[in-house]
Image (cartoon, rainbow, N blue to C red):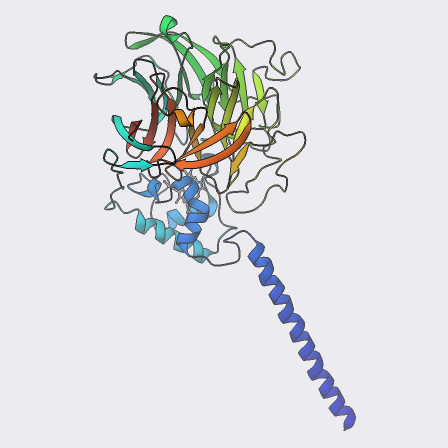
Length: 478
Ligand code: HEC
């Protein structure tokens, strides 16, 4: 009998111990779950999932879904499919391993509800608004209105504005005149992030009228597209003597990460940025292709002999830096004689970089960001042989457009670097001392989705925004 009782107590005791073990195991599991990227194995509201995982590319206010011409259908099952399996060639990640089916359905309902045509896009009221900042009260004047996406802007000393629209135009707006469209420009691949991209003018434009255009070029011998640059002489309203001066190789079928900013330094070298074209594990770290790089060429496209990899075997000789992701900001600092760039990180890790000869920025081996779906791809943020950013943004601001302030109109900010944010509708102003960052202020909050910024040769800052497409002049009101 006693034996039986002992066995019974023993069983009870072991059940107790086992259940303890189980419950403590569960607790540590929950702790692990908290350490996992948000969205994985926890159920979050669609608002939160959208803000954490989708807003970087589709807009915080779902701008990209409002009045959308849907490519892959907008029935509930179409949208679920898009989210689950992604559209990899366009840069839309697959979220099937990130979210539960329930979360995907909730996100779908959320997007479909918010995207009904009735909802009007919020149009920012600009002319009456005063934007306060540490140094100045700023106001915006609309100088060009009702345009598509103003990807690149250049302004000459007489206030003439040369700008591209991504859909495939180059246009000129002279003060007090109507806009004219320039003829004989290249046909572009207007899909995904591609189209007519940056515009720049030759340093001696006044005398030679050379205009440079970077764009997404269709493969003349097959499939895919790439980043290319042409120059042409502006004669009347037409480009003449067109010559292709740069073509990034190889062509590829993806629709994103063209990079494509251009800037001249004071020696007449032209720098051209090219994104990794969505082939992150192959392109940026190999010197035998042009993608995920910044290039340096002469004004006619010929290759400077002092380029860092010039004359080496199996290397693209125009490469100036490598290990870049998607650089969409490039400026020359005339005082310190240095080129700056910024580039889009993945989810977090957008970077502000100095462009030094021959350096490797480490993408995708080193990054402050993580995959769009919330998983990690590297633990390395910095490495001795990689050049680290001067500063970086987590979460991503989605940087586009860049300028360095100079001249008489904003004297307290001379030398400061401006970076536009596609995502947060503001401009980051960074004060630097040579190559060191001293402070950052966010200015012109809610100005719109900033695509381009130009320090005009007429002394004014210009900002190109989307939805609605406009070019704004920034004036100080004190
Ligand atoms: C890295 C950028 C990026 C992120 C992050 C991203 N998307 Fe996308 N998404 C895209 C691109 C690019 C497309 C393709 C657009 C096209 O084909 O016109 C797209 C397409 C879509 C489509 C199909 C639209 C259509 O026209 O058929 C849906 C739905 C969608 N995304 C939902 C989401 C949701 C929900 C999230 C977050 C969980 C998300 N996306 C995150 C870039 C992104």
